[in-house]
Length: 596
Image 1 (spheres, rainbow, N blue to C red):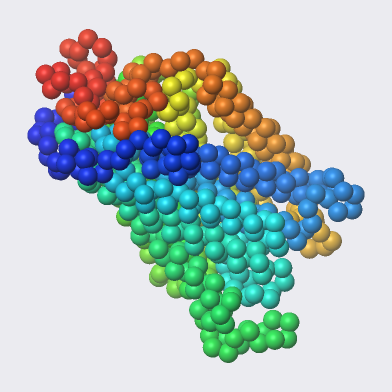
Image 2: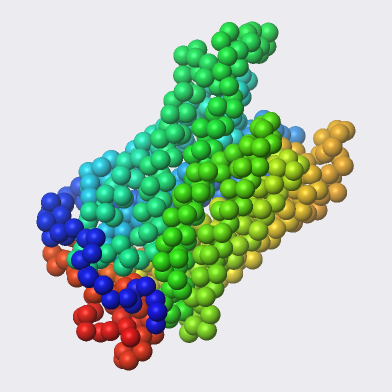
């Protein structure tokens, strides 16, 4: 069939002695409740802990966004004359909404949740390389979550999820003190946890693959988790360093980010001079790879599902792998496009613009390969497949507005408008969440041994898919009309906002769509928890997939393969193979089952 995974090659190429490695990392099954479910060393339990932490975080962020929507459109609701929130609290809600969503949802669920659970199983390992470090990583992330919640119950930080100085650097500036310090402490803890997790993922992928599982036989999910871990290892250390320096500026009188001679309320803050732009460089050197930390695992899940439910091998396996690598590499070269308004040299801006346009090439390769995979396939429109197709749709829709913002001359008038809000919510936010939903519906039978409701799943998909476009597509038009972001009121006395009052009907439409879409997520929650106890019993391989997780019982035993390390003889996407009785070949099927 001409696909890489069908190409004969030695089964042990690039693979270490798996039996020795597995024995070195094995640990006994826990006996007590606390050791089994709370301080567990089992990668599957830790993966579920990450998943449910992300679930709590996404509903926290969702509630904050609903409160912001209500305040924007109906500020008179609830307490007469005051509203649900005060104007000065709007930026606090915006800051925490963005932080919870970017760090504790989009970074946590796709990589730390599903990656922790399924990476070892998909490569034939008994556990992650460092189980204790894995447990420590989760509890550090949980501590970061609790500290961030504490910021909500103090005077909230108002510097946005990017925490730009000098607003974030001055301890006595208005309402910043405790909330901003807690924000920085939480992010520092999260970065430390992410560094531990990244080391674990990289070592596990390189060290614990079973016999026959060469790098070119790994599922694309494993490739995206591996590349994402490399990005995290290189990026989170930079943010951790910047956050610690900003804490010193706020509490130790240093001036890394505070310009010299700055006067606030008649008091000179620093005599020596720092640079607020230094923080922007440090933050966005992390911040743009963070976009791909959030979206790459979704790309892997989409690739896995599109092949499985189209009953076709993935189109261009090696091209997909190299595209993932290229996206990861180029992701570190484009951070400056977030700073076109900072006054950078036009030559520097041109270089960042050129690199930003270049990153569209591997993204387009992946998109066309997904379409090629589905072309003339025997598509099965189960709920996981619907969300995978929705992921591709949102990724393309959000990506199309990227080239506009990659041009400095266009980015400057659009930068602080809702056009940018619409762009990054589509391509980074909701697309990644569609990947999370797709993975949940796909792997739920393996994790819990039961099937989720198909009818509720499809209802959830259509409400969410249509609602997403109803929310974010109109925001592009608002942005082009000059609607600024980060403002807690649409209309004020005099000035620009009164001229934007004509947008209020569109703003109300967006808000109503947001409320309906948020309410539709209750369908998912009901389906999730009801199916855990009452769902139909799942067969071992309900989707007739080929990868290793579908060769073991559901839910998997403690050591995954009951001591019998698998031997891989085939690639991960052997579907519709000529001359084979069924339309798929498992990776562990005998080598005599040829894909020719």
